[in-house]
Length: 476
Image 1 (spheres, rainbow, N blue to C red):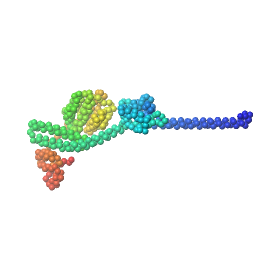
Image 2: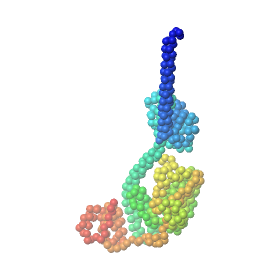
Image 3: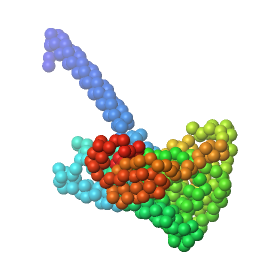
């Protein structure tokens, strides 16, 4: 270039100045674009982190050797470990056991060979830090352009529990319907047995061996009748009768049944105050409470044996004590206590011990209804049931039921069978029950016309309405 030429020199400087300005502008534009990209990246990362951290379920990112790289707060709750303990230090397979672990390993191999056949969603039962397993629904997806995966875990434990409760309730409803049908037929058979036994008692002399045998048979038949009533109550086809119950007798009878089924490794100690009085309740349901509590105690000692202590004592409840329990009022109570020296319970288990279908037993060993039913029955009679327990120390249940005053007991006097001479039309479709009813009523002095056909009975009554003072009929 000819530096002596002033025109050329000026043109060169102008060109250099223009290029420099363009270069600066391009740099500035590039910097602005970079900052915008960085800002967009930060916003994207912030959004992803916010979504990741606030997902309803547990979230984790892991690499191709299953090492956990990142977790959210929910994953900490589910696993029982902190982020510091999880990220970069644990594999998610550390939380899987047995068949589930084998399935996970198989899926990992398939993901390499043929990812299309690997299900995106499946369920398994991982164990948390305390060793408690949960029902988890897992969804895994590969992160494009990396060798990493993101997993979403939804805790389905509560849902499964509710589904199990529903299935159990449906099963119990079906059993109740079946029980109601069976007990109706059995009741007719039992009615005939009781009726003819009582007729035989009428025909035998007092003090004879035959009468003694028949009286024992009547006692056994009445226990069978109570059992039928209990089944009908369970199937909700019988009304609950509240009447004075000698609770000491109920407990004594229940313990006789329990002793026959207990292993020799379990000792029973009792302290039952016989003259404690009565409570207003249903005999069968109180019997059920006693059996449920004693059975629960026996099961707690099934492996190593121990001592089952049962006591019944009177108690005057003051307002200070009553205020601790909703529905309880100051006054006279009976306290029924069942203690065992078994495995005991943790505080968490005690909180749920009266929940329907809750059980710590293995599958098939219990329904989880025994203590729940006991709790419901006691509450129905204005009572309270409490529990005290320590792991490896045993458990104690206290049942508090209002005691009936002596004046109330005197009013509940059992009436003798009424006698008379009225004319009765007796109707029942069971011939044996019709025969028994007719004979018993005639023994009491009544004039009885019996029919097994409701149609015949109706025609007879319509044609001769003045011939009858009373109609007794089976309405079922």
